[in-house]
Length: 397
Image 1 (cartoon, rainbow, N blue to C red):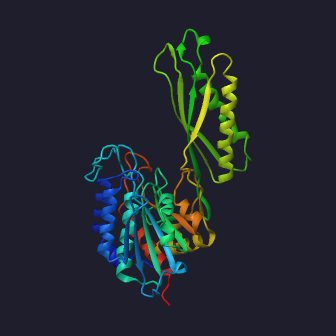
Image 2: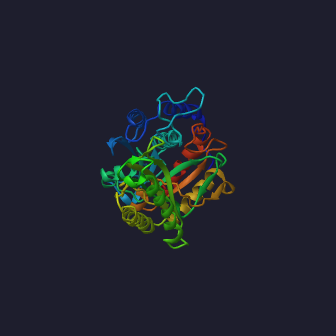
Image 3: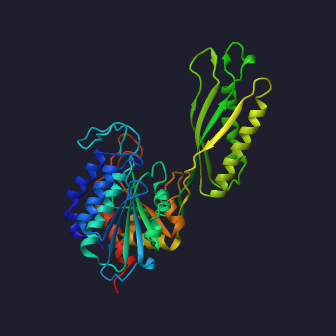
């Protein structure tokens, strides 16, 4: 199935939508303008139901196909997800649609993801060439806050139970029109943590009268590297990274506190939790080791919104690959490799089978880069993918 002519004919309109979203980015749970526009457009397309405010700023549109039966049939309902939030970062681009909101930027292409699903919604609301119900989920807070999980806890799947779920994410460096897929883990689980090393501050010339929190923090960082290297099965992929260290601001003062931040990434939830547990044990041990005269206390605070690993089910991924091949040709569907980034579509895949695919963004700056921009040529391919998913997953008899 090539891209439908009606989608191609609206390419300029879709680019306008996307650039407007890019111009007005909103970070996690602040997507009020974005959500309002999404809801307005879904109603304008003629969606059978539009619900706002799920999970705070989430929006759900429902489209029933031509073969729809009386009542809701979860066995004939499929969910498509697009994320709406921007990143808390400053944009470096100079084009006309550059961010107008200081400190916020669509640096991950969620403006494009939202536009692709809106374009598909417009087409599907017109054609309705499927039998069943589509749940179009526009979620907040993918970057931080686990908006997918928040929407689920707010009753999304009780109100709209579904058989399976699908999502796309753009990928710089992959040609426009190409797709990447893999069954099994595709993104990692993530546990972000903060460490506080507290003690007694003092003069740098008299360390015996103070607690050397910087030395204790350095010991913690160094010793922690042995946990993934020696504390877990070597066939299990684990990443433990420290990303910030802050303490003190003078040459001659030993600070009373040093703060660290870091993250643990892996594909196995049990292993990740074991690594976090070992960090707590290490903190307790180093607190004792550095407490001869002036005690040091090391505590760890783990983000409760740890994202699970995104694990694609086999049958649905095979199906998604075949749909992508219809849109772009089998020669443009490639194998993906699991990677250590995190993605909260994982919450949906904990509830039902489904698949998360990458779609090419062409030769663009990397994701989360201040010079990044979504490629508007990608929109038609992503929209066509969702359209064909609907028509094949819920075929008319």
